[in-house]
Length: 447
Ligand SMILES: Cc1ncc(COP(=O)(O)O)c(C=O)c1O
Image (cartoon, rainbow, N blue to C red; front, side, top):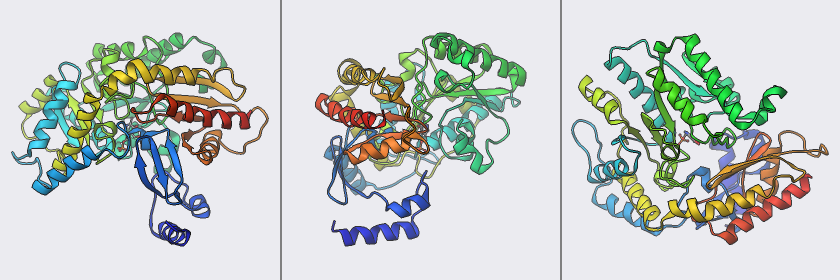
């Protein structure tokens, strides 16, 4: 695209387009970054620059860009039937096929699927199914929901209320009443030096203890569900210490509280398993998914529901919930083709046994770098906590670092004083080297 055409686009963008999670005044000054193409792990922008996408879009393009197999499947479906709903005893073939496929891939016992259009819609759906379940079982007082600090669960009123980030809550006067937050297993940013000095396992046990106290203080029979991302993503890639998740899950069981795993980032291979819940044997009651389900090719999410929960809802009668696009045939066709690629190319095994360990070894090699305070990661997701020992940077280090690394042709995500990395699962070893070479160069600038 020539520069006059790009400038005109940027002007129109500034005039008319409200962007998600963007400081608009700042973006207008610098001009928005227009992306025009993608192939494998690489993107191209409107100036013709190639960049390695170290964050897979928004933690979602698991199979990489440019997969014509998904495009063909969608085209074929749209030519045959572009849309029909799944309301009122109807549906379409791709929705049935995808529900069946997901039921096979999910942890045992989660054989029912409710389709949505996004991760936020999946969590909104999970919130309502949980309430419906308790009402159907004669426990209508169970309405409170517990999530964790640093959690990110989406942008609906309910899913924002679940989110444990002040930047998401404060501007909108949220959370809504009844949404409570327990500590996350994130020692690094704990303001209390005594707790920061704990071992990761002791810190995890303290978090579970605090959650227990919260449940007891609220009254266990008023708590409907605990929502937890197995690895917290947008809140800063918080990897749970040994024993923490299973203890949290057990705590829910003890009190008849449903456990909802938000696997919007972690499902479909990111950590080296189809579902992270299986990796910790969490046996959730519900699992929220989206992102990697279609690798972002079309918007679709799915809530996996434990059979007993689904049967209880069936017995209660009419399920008065659903989106116009629940089970949209084109999005289901995209998801089926995407899951087919993940299976055929054994991308889950590739992350578990090959590229994941390689990526983690490279990431861990930054431990001890003078600009690195902590390294966290699992599978194909990682974070570096940054240190600015010489006071070079004004404001949070993450966005500064991401900007400098983007100038080197690599996209990482800046969050507070850390960067997150989560590339497409198809990334090769030389591409991992390229990604971390740019990160290393920016770390040296910061040190
Ligand atoms: C764990 C988690 N849950 C929910 C969401 C919300 O998904 P969406 O942006 O598709 O609504 C996200 C998005 O990043 C997420 O990471």
